[in-house]
Image 1 (tube, rainbow, N blue to C red):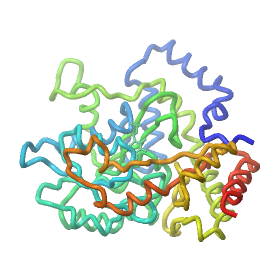
Image 2 (image 1 turned 90 degrees about the horizontal axis):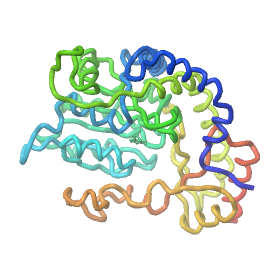
Image 3 (image 1 turned 120 degrees about the vertical axis):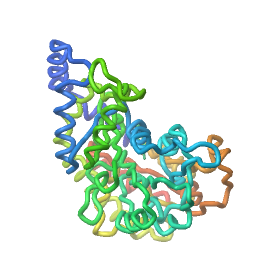
Image 4 (image 1 turned 180 degrees about the horizontal axis):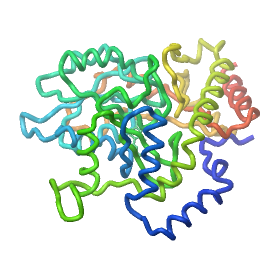
Length: 371
Ligand SMILES: *Cc1c(COP(=O)(O)O)cnc(C)c1O
């Protein structure tokens, strides 16, 4: 049996309804901004529960433009602004901070693979401007504690919710807790369009106005430019795909949660070899990735591949040890939990298009490797 990690061919086996709407767009010629984008933005903010949603070019741009809108990265030299985030995340989190002109301060993660909020306070300096928690793999960060710290030190929170659409913590929607929340519509995310795309959500009308200018050359109208800015608008064609798929997100996340629970249960007696993270009931994890800490990770990984289970490793080298982070002067041993996870973590296929047989087979292959 082959258990694929990807699912695009299954998801888009019948693209006709989407293509029909794209034909309509072609007849209208509304190829930048326009009604289709506005429609999608309204639907997205309704779904997330934010006042505003701003469609941009990618999840990376959603983070970058959020920083720019707050003036973070404007400090130069010894006054360089600092942003706190975690060492185990997708490269784009740190890329957005560094390209905005700020300096990244890492903190370690916890056993749920996300920011250890108890480590944040000691990383704050007089140059810290913001905290960028990552709801990594769809696992919410403990936002209540983080909000208290942010309020105490007067810091912004920009949520990297790029892989956490429909996630919640203490009844609050991920992405709506900070000043802005960034979402990705990348083909591998739980709400996925046909190319790059991203959305920023906010409840702050000033931020919304600033972000509208930032994504569109600083244009107040055709002939008036408030300041020089960027071109990062969500493509209306992708907005059409997004509008078509948004009603599926609940089903997608519920199905992923169901599959994750099934795998948890199927492996829970292998405590000697597999560490399943704590799953508190006040957190709605959406399992953009289903990850486990396992013994003999590399051997298990190769065994699964050989037996048709398309496992992945996210990610073998944490960000503070990347060549790109050389100027930040971190070294091995600085973030022991993130480093341990990079060496021992594995992602199993757990997406919404798997059959029961494929999930059972995945569980069976992992069990067979250890027993
Ligand atoms: C996917 C992702 C991003 C970047 O999103 P893109 O749309 O690919 O630019 C940023 N942060 C995290 C945690 C992600 O998973």
